[in-house]
Image (cartoon, rainbow, N blue to C red; front, side):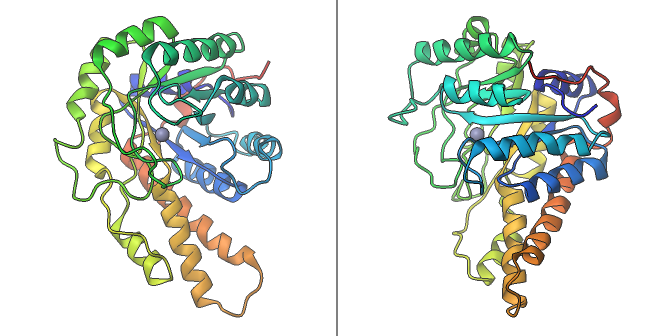
Length: 329
Ligand SMILES: [Zn+2]
């Protein structure tokens, strides 16, 4: 059962009491790393990518090859998800390409990158839901704003936490399958200046919102841990990542008990890849072939993702999702 929808995967996760990691991939080597980790650990998995943010020159070619990769892993259910779709057109483009799930991030104005109004968020999200659901595709929306940016640039400084009353209203008016809730996490390789505690990470907000929207899945964004050993390795081989703290492993595991079923993790696997890549390049100075360096990155990323699949609880649950595969239409 290769391609499934986000709704199918997350419904199974909720019944089973576990979370499913959504891992960001920016080229086909990373796609293989994530799918290999899913196969190794018998995990359902969400592979996600951001429009325009890949090593490829065109989304068309990358998305087509990404979708075709899934057929090579018939033993694991795979959701192919668009992460942070900035507008309805981009979401329609991913749906038409064959993605089984999209995120419309209506929390930010696509032009000004400032928080948009609640009504504007509802309008664009409902528009995407209508198009997606008519084609059997799942939709994730976002309420509140999550700090930082997906590429680690950190453009948005102010984090606006999700409001439980608005969450209920938002779900009723849009019909989203999943909701990204801002609880204080931040995107990118620079998150918190000290280990996060209850004043930074509002874990209590998860259970409050979950109780208000029982039919909707909650998504935790920006949940990489930013392992200090990987940062040290990267910096020992030419990197200059500043000291920073991410979301602790046990907090991610705890979030799945409070109502989170989708855990977004981009930076940790990218750090694992980069640490191995930089180490290889520093060690083998005679090679002009990029393949061995990328292979080292892939192997390290597979190990990292497989480890996280055990933490999130999805490991061992691949065979439980017995649903009709998603077929694009
Ligand atoms: Zn995000």
